[in-house]
Image 1: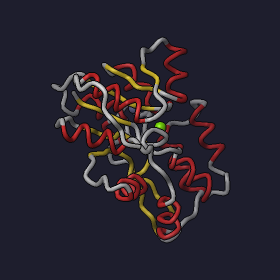
Image 2: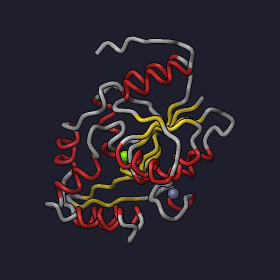
Image 3: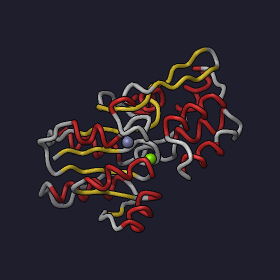
Image 4: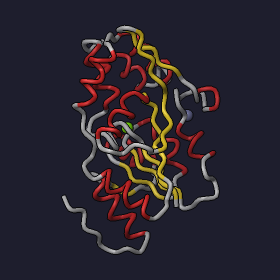
Length: 219
Ligand SMILES: [Mg+2]
Ligand SMILES: [Zn+2]
C-alpha cells in the first residue's frame, strides 16, 4: 500500500495558500484564483500572479502560518502508516514554506512532500516551480507526475484530497477519499470515491483495509 495526500484544505483545516495570499494582497488575489478555477490560467500562472499581488516579510508570514491548524486526526494517520511501514507522500501545488512550518508545529518533521518553493526577498514573494518541467504543463507542481513515478510497484495506491488540483490523480487512484470540490467533481464525472469528513474517517477506513478492525483515536 502507498498513501498520497493533498495538503491545503485536506491536511490543513483551511486552504493555507489561498488564505495567506488573500490576506497579504488585501483580497486582490481572489480574482486570480477565480481565473484559475474557471480554467482561464493554469496553476503556475495563478501562483505567479497571486504572489506578485502580495507583500509580506518572512516574519509576518511565519506568524500567520503558525496560527493555522491541521486536521487533528492527521497525526494519527502518520502514526498508523509509520507503524505499518507504509509510505505517505504529500503532493501539493502550494508552497513549501508553510507546509514545513505546519509539519514542525505538529511534530511531524520528516514527512516526504513535493510542492512549489517560496522565495521571500524582503517583502516580495517569488514562487519557484522545480517540478514544472516534468509535469503536464497545466500544474505548477503536477501531482499526477509524482503519483505515477513514485514507488510504482506499491498497490493499492490511495489518494486523499479536496480540490480541483486533485482531479487527475483522483481518476487513477485505486482508493480515493474525497471531500469538498473534489467530491463534487467526482459526482459530476462519475469517479468512484469514499466520502470523508476528517482524517478520523480515513484512519478508520485504512485500519480496516489493514485488517486491524476498530482502532481508538483518543480525541
Ligand atoms: Mg486542497
Ligand atoms: Zn498536472
